[in-house]
Amino acid sequence: MTPSAADSPAELIISACTVLVHDDQERIGFLEDAAVVVRDGTVAAVTSAAEAADLPAAERLDARGQVALPGLINCHTHAPMVALRGLAEDLPTEEWFNDVVWPVESNLTDRDVELGARLACAEMIRAGVTCFADHYFAMDAVADVVAECGMRALLGQAYFSSQGPEGRERSLDFALRRRGSAGGRVTTALAPHAPYTVDDTDLAATADLAREHGLSVHLHAAENRDQTQTSLARHGVTPVEVLHRTGILDTDVLLAHGTGITDRDLPLLEGADGRTAVASAPRGYLKFAWPDTTPVRALRDIGVDVGLATDGAASNNSLDVWESMALTSLVQKAAEGDPRWLTSRQALHHATLQSARAVGLGETVGGIAPGRRADIILVDLTGPHTQPVHDLAATLVHSARSADVRTTIVDGRILMRDRELLSIDVASVVQELEERLPALVDRSHGRRVQQYDT
Picture 1 (cartoon, one colour):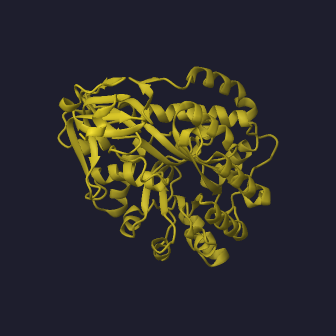
Picture 2: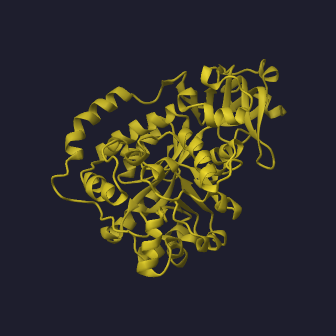
Picture 3: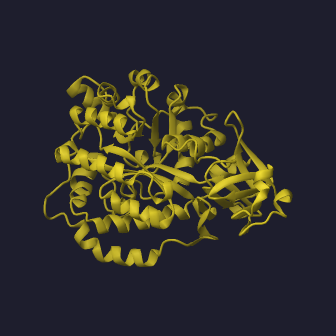
């Protein structure tokens, strides 16, 4: 331990745990009987439990039998859509959008969004998610919830070209007003919905605004094969080629899903001037019976980070990134026809450093190391379903579950202790949300926020 780490009392010491660490080649490793020292919301030291035993601390957590991991990151979701969980089931994509989701979203009020965000944050905190990237409407309400509940988030106000210039302007206004808020826990992005709902003029203007103001861009792109084939038939270019010609790939961009990315897209993604990442949410692709999944191996080969995601609970039914981690490994094995890909350690790399880079926080979170923010979760491996442990990485990815997360910490603040949420009153949220549901889910008006036609 460095002298500076021992000079002043720590605000928190997590002791007697196993800590997931990365070496200088980003390889996953584990330190046993270790301790994590936290000061000013930052990891001050990762040391042995014995060395930390006599250090002064305002609070100590005895984490025997537990593993300390970097907090999980949900790299693409629509948090308030938990209010629509289970509403549109067993439908093809077009019917899901046009017949249920977009008519219901035309009813959304700011209060609906706030309540949905509260419930979503509670779900994510309990599942060990400390940061999420959200792309939705009424995002000031979501930013307020993030500030209050203690999570970290990359937030973008979604817009369609059908809204006129005002949609793009509102997205920029939100991004500029709220970035750096909540003590720096909120970062922001411009959020055009997708190339099939935002025209080239708006995409090019968005790229210019992103470069001018130092903002990233978060949007859906090449979500599935049908979108790519429709774009080729109508415009002669893939969705990724649209992003290239409009300058979006010259910005720092987070692409949601990408199961329709083709071989002809890969050189454009590899040569992009900005930081390009893809968020993969495999549960939804299985549920919609899409024939492809995110081409993780091809993207990794060209240096594009792939972060883990859930999408919204209206399509995935869950905001469980732990499940996304396991499914990513399994689905990639099936897609590649190779049981050696994607390994448990590779899955953990996607869940940690790659997810952090995907949301633009690669130097801040995603690892437990001196200088990184203290976004940490403690996972209990004493249950019968996680014993015995022959390969700790495999146990974490394929045996442990989100319910095994005992404690969730963001910026050194404990948001859940021993499964007890400390920053959100779930019962009151559920009660009010249930009272509002009849008005929210009414589709008799015949309105839609948009038309899905790909």
